Image 1 (cartoon, rainbow, N blue to C red):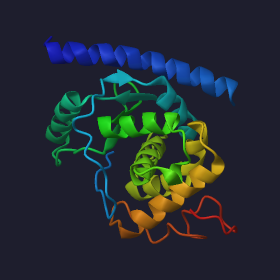
Image 2 (image 1 turned 120 degrees about the vertical axis):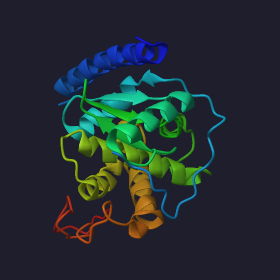
Image 3 (image 1 turned 90 degrees about the horizontal axis):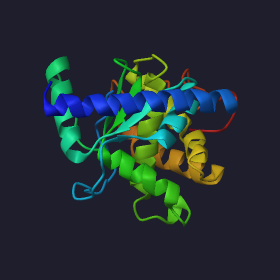
Image 4 (image 1 turned 90 degrees about the vertical axis):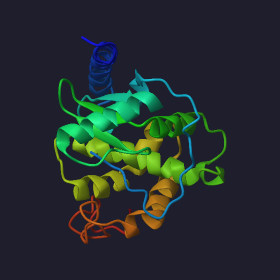
Length: 224
């Protein structure tokens, strides 16, 4: 076994602990995603972020998915390798930064680019409200990405459904990160205005709207 394979094996073994931890939390507390759309995202390629399973992110993903799921954060170097391998295996384009995908083998895990993990970690420690942050668009994108992949973690592989339902659970995710409901609502509305309305298929659906077929809160004025 090569060094890279051995390193990934250690990450997966640690991830299994994250799955077990997430299941415990749930018992107590009761794809690929790449296009940037119309938003502006910062260049975080020089910001160090190690490859690791993240138990806090696993908790949030598990709450959203309703089942235990590990979350793996990759370093910039390891993400490039994982993205290239995934592109080769599935005969698709290489996943760039600000992206994520969900793996079902050997364990259920949401795999996040370092950019997403950096922003989600920053969200937890942010002192001011999210609307005062200079990189609030990156925060909205990152929370949506985790929420989007959490829908996939339920076993639903529809990109349109994951995008729409993920956007509508941004508020719930933000609260799990320790932010207020108002901040979560702000991030959801920011994503709707900045990105979703400019998305294309397979991520966009005409039914992703207030009282549409993909509305999680029909017969209310709450959107997204």
